[in-house]
Image (cartoon, rainbow, N blue to C red; front, side, top):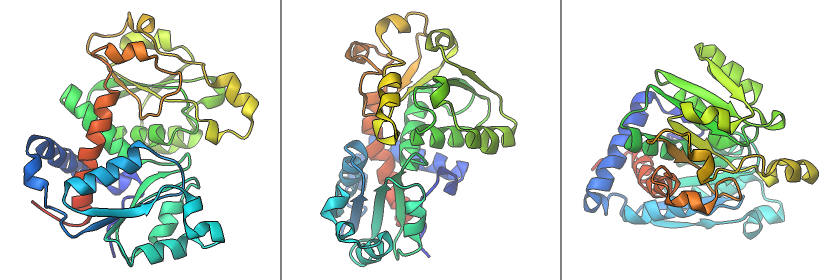
Length: 306
């Protein structure tokens, strides 16, 4: 059976450390990896829109000397004709060596893995999970802070539907000395299943607040998120909540001088462009890091060593 990545817990802490070390080596010695996946093909099956995730997967495979195929929206695949996801995956696994899949329905990549003859990578499933964004986040934190232990991280914005948030909280819950601060309006609070099944199960404390200003001075890492219009059933609720938090230079005045500001992107209004000039803004570094960690992951799942 092929090795898949559906949930971040499919990787042990030691394996995540190994992937980060490989990504660091790729950054330092890119030429060493330029033919690692020669004659291998990656299929990117995106049933939901994406810019960074899809292109970073494709860029990663090309940088490894491989090639790519796939589609960027469901309407350009046979699912528009009524084909099941299982049949689509079974078909594509006859053509490709590895598949990266995004789908709006929670659990779709797990179901797809039952039909695939090649490794499946979950590139985001609804509001559930986004393990490769989590790997990107962990690599960025490690490069900025030099460690993945003993810091305070604030998650701000849409914590209810934010799959990137759910995955990163789950990953960091396995590290030591992490202090969690959840910043959101009442309607977008962290789901109970994360608080109960991840944090409480490990005996981890957390703080919940509606005030970004109150939380700011204690934070070592700030993870901003957008309020996701596509997850709302009621547009009026989205309009009411979408600009609840807007990070600007004024709000950063009480922040630590070495604060690391992250955002999985895309952003809408939640971080002003004025913050881009702040040396604490690390979200464009995140974008670059996404390619390198996905290169490391592709090699691991294909059992390729350089």
